[in-house]
Length: 295
Image (cartoon, helix red, strand yellow):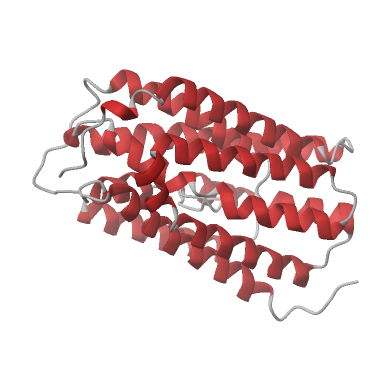
């Protein structure tokens, strides 16, 4: 795993150099295809399966995943804030062998399918597209948008620290579902808001809740498979999510071009609520059979 992480880090460095050095479309497309850049700013990347496999050995699995997600979100929030701050107002255990999916194949396939729906929905409202929506609908400035995304990232980061204690109290599935549904309702409310202040308030509330499922999701996947299957399970649930998230931004672009500026936000909220209800119906009983976390 250490060698794979080092190789992924080198690919990430090469990706950054490629994006900084090229300006033509086709070279950038090649770098985007083979590189590690993640347009969603989420956790779907080449590092995620490796990270999750190593973190899965912890006894407090959800708490460790929460701290892992928190640090990543903090870094993203600070980056979004500092990048635009100066702009003027505009008008695993290595000794255990890894194996392909075996006895856990069925449950991992079902989780991958559900996670893909969630990622597809999330791709409809990437931060870049959300910023464009705020610019077009309310005339928000770049500097104000940078500050706004700093606070959304900060709220999302700190909220993930609550995922561990909450999951221990009400369960991983309940933590995922009962924080995610209100966040989706806030997104739909923001889409229908008639003024900027109300829209921003609802989007901030959404940020406070929308990422609390991330640590619980990773911990749940690692809990329902055997230790040897963990790398394969993490990869199998990550790759379909990445592919699904890559499809939806073009749909949002088409909706924006057609003048349906509200439609992607509403569609994202509705799809995510449908995902939450399906997840709850399919796996609420599965968690009761999960033994206490061990290495």
